[in-house]
Length: 487
Ligand code: ADP
Ligand code: MG
Ligand code: ZN
Image (tube, rainbow, N blue to C red; front, side, top):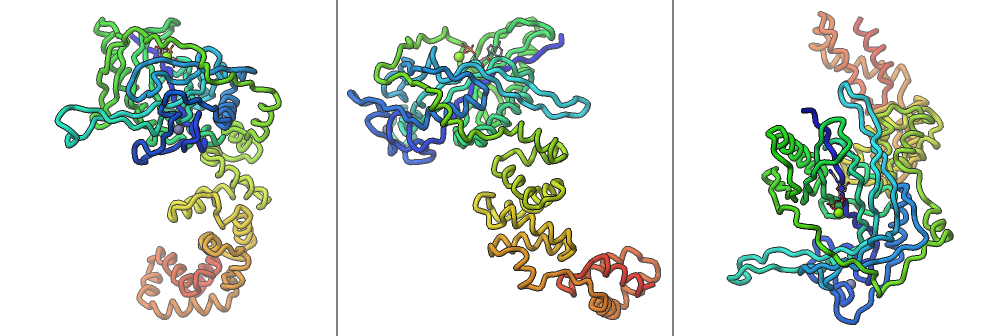
């Protein structure tokens, strides 16, 4: 039997606001001492009232717009009631039937692999709503007391989340991984979340089923929890698909289990059989007002809405004529694509040349020095200036590369540094000839073996001349002169 894989993802996205969703506690307290970032509101003390953080709504609207969702003029908060120690109020404030956004989709570009050509998978958005996070529980260390106990950390209570659930539109583990990669890129691009899976800013549960190829119906799914990286999502889904195939092939049924991914063992463990859907007794949150999203407010929020990664990539391909590979890397991050565009504008020449310098040399400079593009002293204008100095033959390529570092540490303009340090390329024949002659004289043995046929030594001679002249010689000229002297 040939099977088709069906996947839907449920994601929780932590919005990067300063404060929590209903109180003024700091929103992000990753790795902070437990229960130091809490107040009566987020710990659900009797008599307190929540106040909605405006920035949460605004970031939610930005995300909804990026997902092409419809944003209704009014939405409500609801109470989702359940009893668990990390939920001090006994309910979670969430949105149920009238949420911030409806529908929408994310287009995921699947790259060409081997024989398969590239294609776009459109992933529908089933649900997109705002809610507060709950706290965290963990087992107490053995030193605490003899008995098994649980510890509770409320720091995360009230952290603003968007819950976003896809339609079961994904067709492979690779598509699910690519969806998450693109979602993470998009979240950072529009500035609503740090989207770091390791820090739980982006969490994901994967729902997986398989069905015979060509079938329209949905088979029973299982739900995979505790996948904390994109790689884990991919591997866990692949393993689950294999398991389901074996079950069906053996004539057995798939039961709607909840599975937990064990990262250390790289295996899935059954957490529980799906109990009947909990009755959350949703009802409107009486302590919060409806959220009225006027056209004016929406316009204000979306005033600076950026061109999205896929659109920008398409423009880099069509307007700048870049190869797919370059356009893809240049649009992984908004800061990088902005930097590139500014450098192209300043350079006013072949964009591919700017792309080469940026992707090879500037990114290496960043990596080696642990820098980011923001606040870099090597501005896009300076990068363009360096490339033009090389184009004009004022400096050679190697000097250009060392200039990147010099400009960045000093903040001076490339032109100024070339002037101050006398880095301009030496094309003066007599200076190069003198250096070449000296090298040949000092290295009589090498000169002999070159003459007796070891032609590969030429590169070494050129290198020696360059070194003697502080890297400033015109390398082609040096080679020509060496050849002339040796032959
Ligand atoms: P539940 O009520 O079990 O939580 P939902 O309808 O809320 O199920 O869907 C949860 C997620 O599971 C969604 O992302 C949805 O796309 C996905 N999903 C639903 N049915 C299937 C299926 N048969 N196979 C794979 N994924 C599915
Ligand atoms: Mg559900
Ligand atoms: Zn608080």
